[in-house]
Structures are given as structure tokens and as C-alpha cells.
Image 1 (cartoon, rainbow, N blue to C red):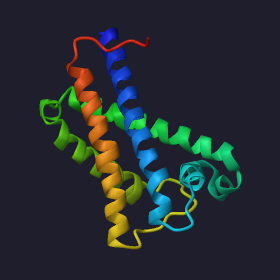
Image 2: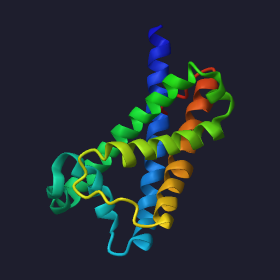
Image 3: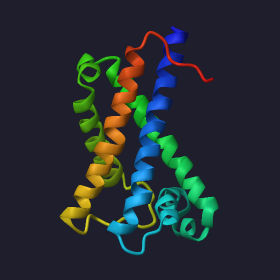
Image 4: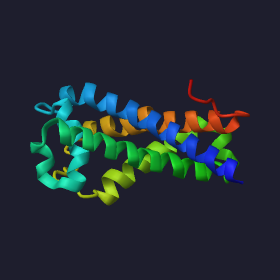
Length: 163
């Protein structure tokens, strides 16, 4: 039993980090083109504003790294929720792409639409295009990768070890 729990936890971490890294790269690279004036450091500080409020935007790289770490932690939690659900609902394991689409939509809706967490600056979607941009990021660069990584590792006989 301990081995199964440890394996599930490892899968959750790897899957969650995969989605977090891809989503962060997508946002850092593309958001300055979508939202004029937004810089990569502001993208990372936005998550830190959950805990620090407006001070996150004055902390330089320290708060940017803190925001990134916080985003990684939240993404690992989403990975854990997906692994927990996938071990109980076979459909999720058998339909990773659809499961990932659903995960991306749910994660975006909960994080952006319901919780708002403590973000110092939360804007409703000012346009339909910005909504689609954020939705695409959460589905393509978060939900689908998390589901793909998790289902592939859960189906594997063993989880690859660090080299």
C-alpha cells in the first residue's frame, strides 16, 4: 500500500510540474504580446500576489521566484487531484486527451473564476479573445500535459527513477 501511495504521489508531482512549466513558458513568452506592458517578471509575480498582495510587484526577482514556486505547488495539487480521480475513474485513464481538456477547463474556472485567491490584481476577462487565450493556455499547456504524463506513468509498470 505504501508503494502505491508513494508512486501516486510521484506521478502527481511529475505531472503537475510538467503542466506548470509548460503553462508558465506559454504565459511568459506570449503574454507580453497579448497584454501590452506585461513583462515575464510580472507574470511570475502575479502568483506571489496571492500571499503578498501588491507588495509582490515591488519585490523583483525574489517575489517572481516565490510566485513561480507557489504556482508549482498549486499545479502539483491539481496533478494529485487528477491522479486521485484517474485511479478511481477508468475513463480518465482511457481518454487522456479529453480528460486533459476537462482538467484544463476546470482548473482555469476554479482558479480564475471562482477562487480568485488573494490576487492583488484580478481583472475579469476584458475581451472574449483574452478569455480564449487563457483558456487555450490552461487546456493545451496545462490540462492535456498533466493528463498525458499522469496516465502514461500510471499505466507504466514502473516509474522511471532519477539518473
